[in-house]
Image (cartoon, rainbow, N blue to C red):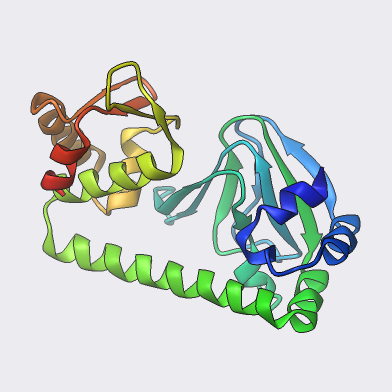
Length: 226
């Protein structure tokens, strides 16, 4: 089972079956319940986590306790890989949203693997570049576009990652316990501004939402709003 999981992770796709088996032997299987913490910002980055099942939320907190730089991760995501490279500290906190399972590898073993397998190191570098690109794109959006545009773009990204077909034709249900505060952290605005933007998108028939659920009803319309 571990080999199968690792073989589906993009950064490990260049490893042979034997190399995957060797890596799997060095990993520990763990599980968490909803609300449990995988790791906390400021702790030494001693492990890398590969999500096998479930969902996790990663975020940073301000001195007032407000969440920032929030993101959601699902099966196949690798957590803690970047800070493991310099033996630093986790810059963010990761919390399980549902029952979540992951494979855990010591950071030292992860670094050894990158040295032994340059193709894997290059794939990790691709992840770093992608995250930097997305971070810069979000900064540019927050400086130049409306809250409604930011919310629409975020909902489309979440629908692409976590969406499943909804009840209506062409609709997509985002399977996440997504709150207004979550969206506010992801779009760099306030929960009140997010609520107004969501109300407008709902009024235009582009989305629907309820307590901890969101559905994209008109993807083309939401892309236009983006």
